[in-house]
Structures are given as structure tokens and as C-alpha cells.
Image (cartoon, rainbow over all chains, first blue to last red; front, side, top):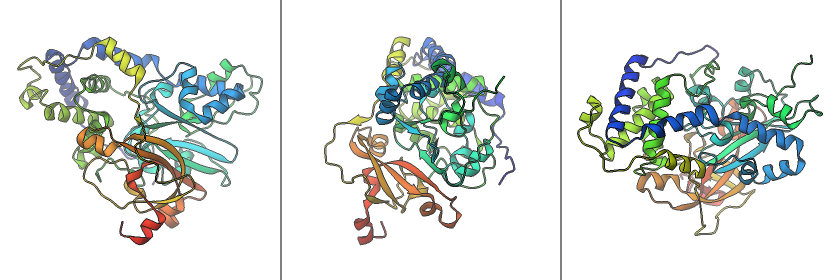
Length: 204
Length: 225
């Protein structure tokens, strides 16, 4: 099935009105502090995001001891860089190698490691990815432009409990002399979900 | 529950819409996200109860609506169930009376985000399974919240790692009790799940609570399980 399916949903105006009503009701009843609302949205819109995960990956690529700690027990290793908290309480980091490619999904809802990647992109939460990632991962990866050699084992991590997964991508060839900061700049969110690989920047 | 949310392996959803790269596509989604989290911090329900509320959306509606509409449905349902708002108030968007519960302040929000809600608990019983052991997922179909997806019911896999004892999601959703159950990372070969339609050289790792699992011996003695 390769045709794009459009899912129909309520026209925005109707749902916008319903949400606005709920928001003013909850503020009016003093169940919600509007400042808390702003803080939450600002935190995940502007502060917490894949830059955090990229810093973890870049550190692992440049510091063999850190890489070892990260793969053995990711939660404290990630905490070393200051990233912790909600939806990252119990972290596991899975390592891509030339023989093994890892990708992460949550078939039941949208579990995702917030402290290192922020909130998930809409496609991660949508039916198509959740349905297909476990049954046809190679087809899914192809859609993201990644064709893996048949010899490479694909491991799909379905986040069904409270363990959250971060993929440690392969460091691209040609970046061996990069600094940690330069490496962090090339690590993408999608590579840390495991639907793409990290590529070296085009040679100038 | 065998709800519409249990999507693993289902067909017919088409290509992945990669244009949806953002977390929030509309402003109202930000509001639903913020309201859901702040209301969750009132302490009237837990994360598993919140998930169950979203899963209980009418299946046809679940599949035809977007992600944050599920959240909106779940939040409204929980607010009604806990008596924090009335149906009339929801309909009018006007408050009949102020709540006695204190709203989560920005300070409280910051603290909760920083600490999260760890689910690891002290172990009360020894672990039943060990790494490398073959296990079979019970063919149970509870109507309540569970974190064993349908696509691996009755399938055999291999334990690869013990995560320790964690809050058992099923009980947490049902009664709110934080009961420890051992949590295992179990590896399933694609061919064991999808048969001849499996892609070559792939597998799925799933985190499963001990009550979901049988040893190979138990399964052979009572294959119906």
C-alpha cells in the first residue's frame, strides 16, 4: 500500500471552539493556572528538544568511556549532561552498528523520550507509523529514504512500558576529526528515532 | 482492551505523512497538551488511567480523528468521571462553581517535570524468568487497560533483559494501586509474529510485565493460554 491516505477529521473551527471553551472553563474553575499552561507549552516548544539528544550522541561518539556508560545504563549517563525528568525516567540507549539497525515506535500510544527528543513529530503518533513499524520496518525505512542491506538486522523497539529508547546512530565516515559541537550539529531527531542515519555534511 | 489504539501490524493506513514534522500542527493542540498535563498534576488520576481514557474513544472516531483529539476526549472524560466539571459546564464553557482543588502552580509544574514519575519499585517477589529464557505471551484479552499489544498474543519470544519491578500498568489503571511486577525486555523474531509475510532479518523488542507471560512449559501444559 503506497497511496497516501487522507484521514478526515473535524474542521478546525469546531474543535478550536471546543478547546477554547474547555480552557476558559478550567481557568474559571481555578483548576488550571494559565501561567502553568504557558510554562508547559514553552518548555516543550522552545526548551526541550532533539538538541539534547544530539549532545548525548556527540558525547558518546567522542568519549569512549561515556559511550560505555550510556549503553550500560542510559538514565544516569544522560543525567550527566543535565537531561532528566518526565518521560525519560527510565532510559535505554540502543546502538546501531554495521550489523544492527535499531528503530523505535510506540504501537499503543506515543511513548517517546521527552527529555532528549522533546515531543514526538505528528507522524510518529499517527496510525500509519504505529501500525507498520513493527510489521514492515524495512518498507517504512525505505519511505524515509533508508535502504538497508539485507544482511543488516533490523530491531524494532515497541515502547509498551515506561522504558524510553534512544537510538545511538552510526557516526558517519569523514567526521572523525569533527569536534563534539560539530558532531552534535549533524545529529538529527529522525536518526535518534532510528528511521534515518546521520550523514556527513556535504564537502564544500 | 482490544481498542482501535492497538495498531501494531494493522493494514490499510497508507504511507507515512512525513510532512507532519512538528509536534503541534495547530494552536489548539498546544492548549490540549498543556491542559492535559496541568490537570494530570491535580493528582486525581494517573498516567495509565489517562491512557485508558484515550483508548476508550469510540473506535471509529479514534481512527478518524487526530492525536490531540484523543487527548481532548480523554481529558474531558476524566474531568467528568472525577466530578471536576459537569456535562453542562463542558457544554457551556461556563463555571457553575469554583473547584476546591488547588491548581498546579508554575513552581509545582517545574518540579514535576524535573522529577518525572519513576515507575521502578522495590521487588516483592523473585523474578520468574531469566535472560535467554523462552516465554510465550498469554492469549488474554482483558477489556481494561493493558500494555500487551494484540499482535504478540500467543507468540513465543526470548527474554533479553530484566528491567526490575515496575508499577504494573493494568492494576494502576484499574485501581490506582502501585503494584510491583517484573518487567522484561522480550525479543520476538519477525517470522514468529508475521509468518510468511515477515520481512527477512528483523525482530521486535517489547517490554512486557510478568503477568503477561508464560514459560514454555506452562504454555505446553495449557496451550489455550
